[in-house]
Length: 440
Image (tube, rainbow, N blue to C red; front, top):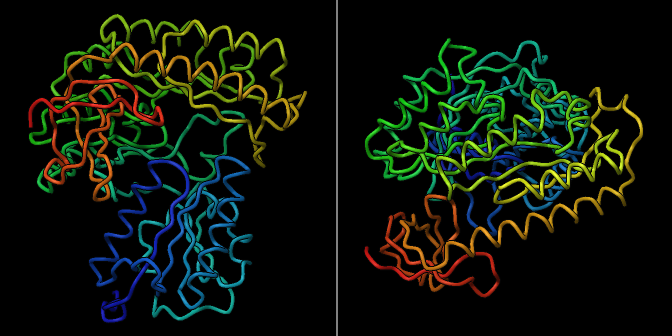
């Protein structure tokens, strides 16, 4: 049993690194502590509890995690410091050795964070509570708004794919999920709390159903029937798991938006084989063609990794040529980072940091051209836009159904409202299209 008296009037700060799934889980942790009496620390206020949810997708992510821990220890020297997340699961000893860290929680323990806090007394040595990866089995529900208009519904966790460059299966365990019935109930609760948009998150969401014998397509159809939620978005989904029936359903659904995020990782089949991906460029191109045939204006984001071991200059050029011809909206470009324990470390040759940077710049230029052209062709169109809160006096921003960022004059009354907007030219810093509100 938790002694709730210990938590009354205590304050906490939360720091999250990494993906949308991490942000969703941090928000759920914060909500659980709030129910015990813990409030978020105000700006400049020293907190009693620090919770740091870490990422370990790259070496840079690991470094950012360590920097964040040291920064928060300096800002809150007397706080009880808890570190969790992927880096905590993979490197618990490294984190526990940092002076001032009181507790390290692994992936299986994260959901029960409040139960591990005890009397909040500082530890002389950081305690580690982290199960071996083979014992990470439970699915921790999470449907959280955080500080934004959109809710993030965690539908799946873990991954069975074991791509050669990736440590996520080692950090989060095998694929598992909640039931469709439980996820529908969470979506209904979000609607009751005023939510208008829900983003489906997970590690490998297309693999949904491992725990329950259901399918991701079944989940999509069930969520589409939830009253009160006007928009659903599917976050990153593997191309081999994005079936034609899902694409066709989204094209005609009531509430699923014409917006896809699909990891490609390389536009060269030889590199895809080295990465142990489960598709080739022909399959990927066919998926893009299918989307465009039924949703010509869909936003399609694509993940690409440059400089992976074995990516020769010729292979990179093949990837560039494939991407130039691909009718997508934006590239999310990442430089390959060597991860301990991965099979990719056995592949030769390695690519220099300088060459990784050059290749990244090449792909970012391709991405900018595609993104700008996509936005430009929508100028003058009228679209529904869900507006988000902003600081008083600052322009408000929101997104169209197909994820075009729109800027309009500030109006507090329009927070979390869907309005009809005519899209104008690019704003001053070319990060959005200016919009003229037609109906409220």
